[in-house]
Length: 437
Image 1 (cartoon, rainbow, N blue to C red):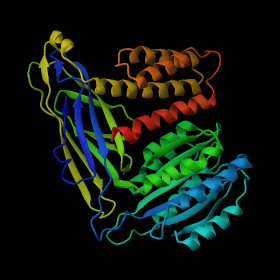
Image 2: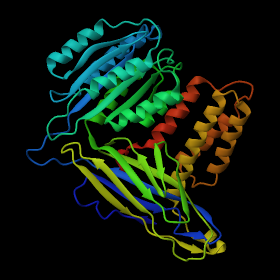
Image 3: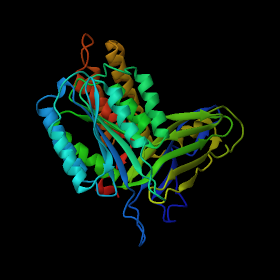
Image 4: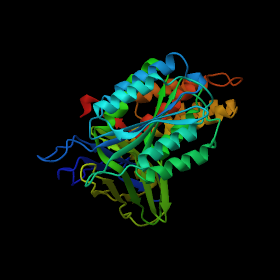
């Protein structure tokens, strides 16, 4: 049962639609899933409008001793590839860090001359020292914060943080770093965190990216670096919605929890979700678990959802409402036999499974191996009740393998990072496959 957004045909590049798992709940109180699907399309610029919004990028590179050899060489190649996506209207900065922080190139227009200077500066970067992650990242963000947006334009600003190790100088507390990422995001600067190899803290980097409105990327082998940097810069050149927020207001007698990995603020009956910047071709399925209290009224008042974002070309704030059909109360027997929306059930099952996998990884990191394996077994059992799509079957297989892992030893670092990266990528949405557009 899907409610189509009536504003989808008004020329806006972003649309939102709502789907309930089923149109009814039990009079005895019930749990039900609600899916809000956000989709984007390519923006069509009118004559005289800029081709796209200008971009400010601060590349923040770990140059600590563990980055020596092939890693640092391939990082240099990756940055070279990435800056090729920028033009004269964009700006770029390069910051490196080990035990000290160096602003190798202050923020400047990405002209051919600037790019040549940056490439030359990269040649002199070598690996040394320890990992002053907070210092490097905050200095990169300061480069962006000092920049003034062009007249009438909303500049897209992002810090690209790359590291292969653990923060061991400066601010090392994950909670403080995550709060800083959220505060910096509120100023319009997003953070993408890239972890290389298997020695970094995936929970920290993913949390920083989620709070910072960017992406978390696990780079298992340095040879993948050019592709990841190219993807990231390619995404920035296709942004259609900056700093989007979704507000969901609930009626009395209903509670909701967002399953996805986005920051949520709750005031009275309204949830405000800070989404990541939206690029053309993106699709995000926001899954809410809704709980209704017992009641006798047949009709439950409708929820209210509003999506807001900043247009990157004009800098205007845009608001888009999403009508959500009200649901009815019926007897428990009738609620049990009402047909369900299999798409919502599948997406909800996968989202809940990804969240549970992340919790299992946390338990494993704390040495609570038996609890971790039990969590994986519970995920498998829950997924067996979901529609058996190819994605669901794949996650059942992975859950079975992880549940059967030894309770006498931790999971491998690669498995931990792959699971956290999957959760972040799946939960926060991304580019739709070509055959679904």
